[in-house]
Image 1 (tube, rainbow, N blue to C red):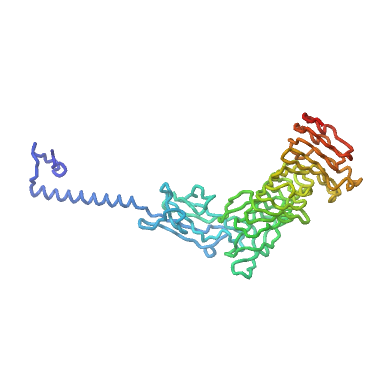
Image 2: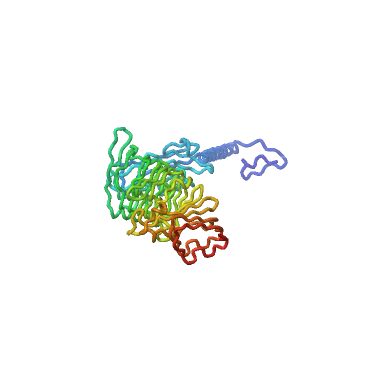
Length: 467
């Protein structure tokens, strides 16, 4: 066994013997080399410790170049070093604090100092969340959960506020309460407004009144409503002819529920969406749909679906004159047909209302400018869950004056389901061509005495019909 090899250099040991005796020169050489080995070992240990510790990270948070200034919005810089405090998770992290995820990746929670509901003063920009400029990326799932969570991809990073041009400036009046305000006016360029944010707060004040007319903004295409918007009724967007989408946005101004109203909206006022291009809308907490001069969804010819979350009260003509172009529209309603007046969907033959106890809709004429209320067609239908279909018109036989007879006709272009088992027709003068064509489950039909005409192929291909 040779124990001298690490120390003796090229000197060969005595064969078969342990060598413990060294000359003075050899001892000196051993001291030099040993000291060097010890120094190298210590250095390695220090390097290993440094590598084991967290490297220094720094992140610059800046306001962005458009629509903001340092004086208005400020900025911050956060950094951590080897002995700095790092939170255990996003939940425990404070504004500007670092934390590690389950996979060991370093993250930062961006400060909430930028209140996303702030509407900028005169520059027309609105805060629209955060974006990574370099050295970071939005954490997986952050868009839905918390957009202030960024994963660092380098030891230095820049995260910047994002701004959208709204071309819209609100005027506010502070209420008696120290923490509330009313939006009492607005300044905007009619030709440039394409998107509007409805804020929950402005400069830390809760908005509890919205006294601004938003009607007739011809280029407005989207409305973003903050989830904490506290006013129960929406402002009117009547005749905003380009409006297609109403979204709920989270506290960072990012869409959280597409084509959905916030839970705080409980009432839809008269004409709110009349004449718009709204295609679909979910209304989880609406309790009433009001009608005044015009219905809430009147003449929404692009409408395809509306979903209620509650059995709301529906006023007359709320969904009138819809889908003239033949687009089918379904209204899903978690209540009974009794909550729907026959004229709630008048002149909307392609609209189907699906309720808990069946469905209902319109099967009379489409609206024309010559028709007056009750002066034209008023033929509507209801069907229960057993497939019993009833078609009726407004009033009794005595109410159907001679000049209305040509209008009280069941028209063929309608949304009546093709699964009726029985059909009862009341107070109708005529049945249009192909009106009940292809009702292959229909077995029985009851006709009124005052019926004067049945069109060609009105019951064509009703193969199960026996009486």
